[in-house]
Image: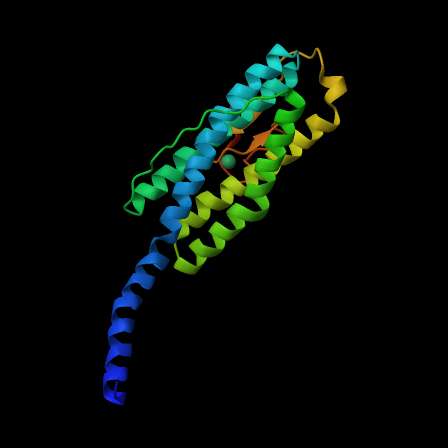
Length: 205
Ligand SMILES: [Fe+2]
């Protein structure tokens, strides 16, 4: 192959490859939101199943915590789906059958899931959304990450206090219906995460 033919071939390869790479880069946030939507939707179903198990094992307070977190995950899923739609996509659900073990193991699994979302998944998705300048995606991803941080703490507290939570009754938790922030009490006038008025909080027990 002579020099001219080599240069021509390089141009052709670049012309084919570059638009493909550009398309992949611009669609990443929609794909990431889709992954997050699925994760949140499955967490919602999993936590409801964990709540049922906690009730069977007489961990009433922990059952309430799982139901509150389940509510929060459904808020995140709905928020992610709305942004996917605004970005021209359609949220698709792939529901998995929850794996339910003992309440102790379920708490451990929940902590692992929340920690992964807080430390790995959401930070990576946020970095990408910022790079793409997709502000609505940044907002929904950031709010979900803040709530998962609270969930991880609440689950860790429950696991550390497991023996004392046996034979407890249902407990009230408060979930922000705008962003999913979850708390054991509402001692503030606005949501600490999204700044919505506290009347946006829903009681879950
Ligand atoms: Fe909120």
